[in-house]
Amino acid sequence: MSMLIRLYPQAWRDRYETEILDLLAERPGSVRDAVDLVRGAVDAHLHPNVSVVAPEPGPWTHRLPGLLALAAGLMVTFATLSISAGAGPDWGVAGNLLGIAFLLMLVSLPGEYLAPYGRQMALAFSCIVVGVVSASATNWWQPAILMAIGAEVAALSGLLAVAAIRAGVGSGWRWLLVQAGVLGPLAIVAGITALREWTGIALVDVAARTTALFGLPYGLAWLVVGLRMMVRGSATFTDPPDHPAPAPEGQPA
Amino acid sequence: MTRPLGDLGRFAEPSLYILVSLSNGPKHGYAIMTDVEEMSGSPLGPGTLYGALARLEKRGLIEALEPEERRRPYRLTALGATTVEAQLKSLQGFVQTGLARLGG
Image (tube, rainbow over all chains, first blue to last red; front, top):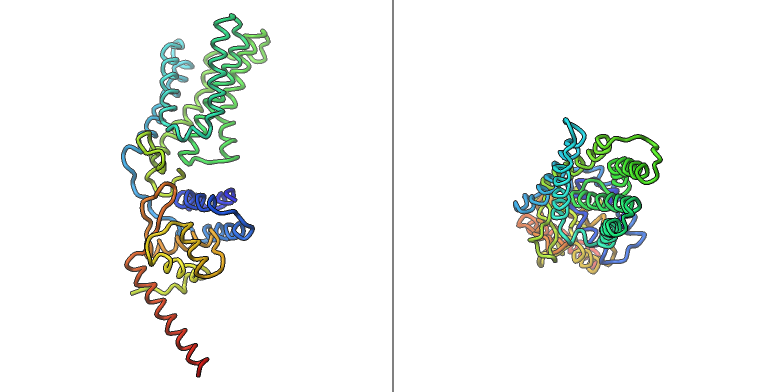
């Protein structure tokens, strides 16, 4: 039933989606309700001005998560550019920037938002840890690196997905396509590089500088999501757990 | 000066029920829906409910309050109270006329 909400215009969803999802959760859906929702969606498209009410500005603290996400996007973008451009790649600076950016991504998403995806995120982080530990213990780096790359892509993809959903930037299949466009090339290039290191099979001879460029869309995606989060506002760690709804009206909590 | 609800088309009747429902205090969507269903004896769909709420809010007859958890209560404005009172008095006159004619 909640899928039908996607038929409504974005402005309507921004304003009423949270409420109506809560309402639908409280009573069993019926065919009559489904038909009524479809009729309502048609009406909302025909009379778009009816449901648009100016949102109230939220407290300044709700801009912080967006600011952190924006900073993370800037750092990823700068790190990838610093590797791929200039006289020589500065791996130290880029590595530090990427590490800080990863922490900022985590902090920008309050735990309650990550909680529904906890199992997947825990699996991804476990794979990273197991990969690194097993590599250092057995000196069997190649499979461990592959595992770590896969897990990192999954974790980064998950973080961006949660942030984008919180920021209201697309959903469902549309968002999956964006994800595939942003992280797909990165995963493919990383896989090819790892395969070359592991087996000596060079499908494509990809230089490190070129590989880094594939991280650029990811940084840019965080910039977009961060900006959107800043504009719309987002709940922070300081919000009580039982009151997760951010101040801007109608934003999904 | 209150505008009649009749120009709300298919949302006119649900809107009147919603205004009456909010007459005794603020309610959130689900509470309004169950209250209206009790009063009218017929189901009120979620699409119709929010279509009507949007129109009433736009006209300034109701206003949204701060969300309580995921629920956002609505309350009647002064204009909304005047409007519902005028509508009910009009209906009262209509009902009295009809009953008098039946009786007569």
